[in-house]
Structures are given as structure tokens and as C-alpha cells.
Image 1 (cartoon, each protein chain N blue to C red):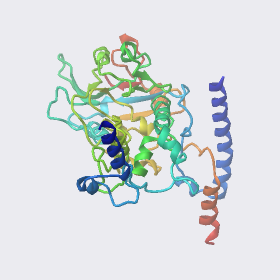
Image 2 (tube, each protein chain N blue to C red):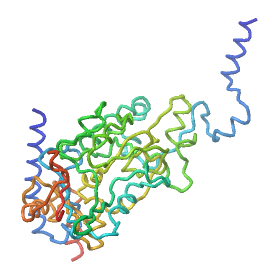
Image 3 (cartoon, one colour):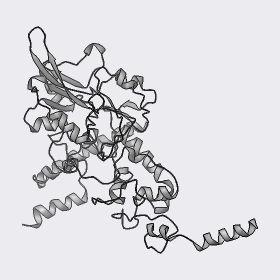
Image 4 (cartoon, helix red, strand yellow):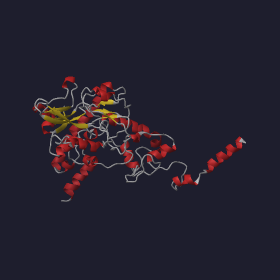
Length: 248
Length: 171
């Protein structure tokens, strides 16, 4: 019941906002540019009206380019300890080689933010969960570090933190003894900002990554998904991933 | 005999007997009975210093933070009033040499050492305000997901003031 009325309030505000904004435009067009546009007010819970997704065009993803990985490491302060086997890694570049033709492709692999996430299925404490808007997260307050989710994930997307950490980013708390993975930069998404990897890829003019609401037929990602054929990695598992690839 | 020593003990406690070494740790404040609590950087409102009355915060701050924690992690509610990040932004200095959480001069640790309650918040969370590129992003219109710019949900009085000042005041 309360959920329904919350949605009603949100809708009402949104419609009201549209009317006022139209008035604002009529008064002073310049001001709207500096206005911080928010898709969702900070005090409203996320809803399943939105499903965040990412489309990666592997044709535009250059071999040897690591910009998305660097941006992610910088954004979340994923420093290494010189132990590549266990160092935290939220996004990594994967190279695919067709043995028959010798064709080489690279693509970024990250948490696929599945609709039916196996990591959530196996979590014994409920720490691994999917947000209403489709972002799969670990509630590190509840995580006991058993690493079942790491075993269950078909994409090897999760990392366990073995070391004591310092100087974490305020918006990205991380600590020893918990499992973590790509959060789709949830702190940014909640403020209507694109994830760090997407920004990096776009700023370097590679434009291989598109992020947006897959439930909104007018969003850029939905348009592109409609126009071009795309694939889910391991679509046979029927996880309905939130990350889709073009050109593989 | 036992009675006598107990009385002296009580008496010395009442007088507040402490060694010079201890006194050095405590800044010369008139009240040396409690822990040294660093001053906050700013006030929440004109009426009150913190987000709730001080007595309430002292007793129940963990409840507020806990509620907010679940709302933020699971529902994406990012209001600032009870957010741990804002506690730190206000209660810990952003200076280079600001005390870390393992110091007794850190706002949280000052009381928690005094009451012998250990906290593990800062094994994961930042224990001091940290400036990052994200701060500037959230105030700019760059890299928005909805680049078509959804209209702001409210146009409050402050924004209206800006509107009128900028566009009509100077003409």
C-alpha cells in the first residue's frame, strides 16, 4: 500500500516539476543548463520502473586500451598489492581469439548485473542482493566473506578483499573480509551521473560503452538495442544480464 | 581497614587525582571529567548544532546511522541528514594532518575510547572528509545519464531568487 502511494507521490511531483520547469524555461532559458537534473529525488527509494543496463560495442573496443579499467580503479581506489591472482578487480579486459581465423577481439568484462543473479541465489546471509533497479550489490555489513558468490558467478566478476585497506573513497566503502564487485557506480547512478568506465570511454572518444535505462524505450541504450543485434555472454544460462555486447 | 582504604579511594576519585602524564593528553579545558571531543565544523541549523539535539545524538546516534545505512544500501536513498559520510564531513577536519580514527583525538574514537566501545565502521568507511573528482561531477551537468535533462522536480524559493537576481536584477 505504502509503496503504491510513494509511486503516486513521485509521479505527481514529476508531473508538477514538468509544468514548473516549462514555466522556468519561458522565464530564463540559460538557467536550466546549470540546474542539476535529478531523475529521482534523494529521499525516494529506487523502483523496478527502471532497469539499468550497459551496452558494449566490441568493434569499438581497442586491443590494448585499458581506459575503463583505469577509471574504475581510480574511482573506487582499487589499489593492487602486487598479487594479481587476488587483487580486487571490478572490470577487466578479456581477449577473445578465434583459433580458426586468428581474429582477435577484446572486451571489458564486469559484473553483468543479471536479472536472476546466481550470486544472490547462493548467498547464505542475504548480503548479496539485487536492487529494485537491477543493480546487483553486496551489503558488506552483512557479508561474512564465505565467497560462495564468487564460485557461483559465471563471469568471475567478484573479488575478495584479503588485505586491510586504508583511504577508501567516502562513496565506496570497501574492507577486508568481504566480497565486492562492480556496483555500476551506484553512487553516481543515484545522482544521475554515468559510471566512471563509461565516462572514461566516452571522454577518450572510443564510445564503446552505453549506459542507461533498459526499461525506457526512449533511452539511448534501448534504441541501440532495438536497432542492432546484441548478445548476452552465456545467454544459455538465462540470467538475463544487464550488460550486453555487440560484435561478439 | 578495608573501609578506610575504600573511603580514601572514593575521596581521591572525587578530588580528581590524576598524574601529570594523563593531564598532558587532555587539553586545558575547564571540564576534564569526560573525553576530549573535537568541535564540529559547522552547525546544522540556528537552533541546534547537530542533526538532532545533542543528548539524543549521544544516546542514539547508532540507531540513526543504522537506519540510514539500510535505506542507502538497499533502496538508494541518499538523504544527507543521517548519513555517516556527512557525520565525518562535519565532525572531522579536512586538514592534511586531521586525526585518523585510531587517534583519541578523532571525533568518533574520542568517546568510543572513553566508553570502551569498539567500532568497526572505519575498517571500510572513510574516517575523514576526502575530496574527489566525484564531488565536482555531482555539481555539474556533465556526464548525466539523462542528457535530455529531466526537469528538476521542484523549483524552490532559493532557485527562484537566483532566477530573478540573475536575469532581471542586473538589467
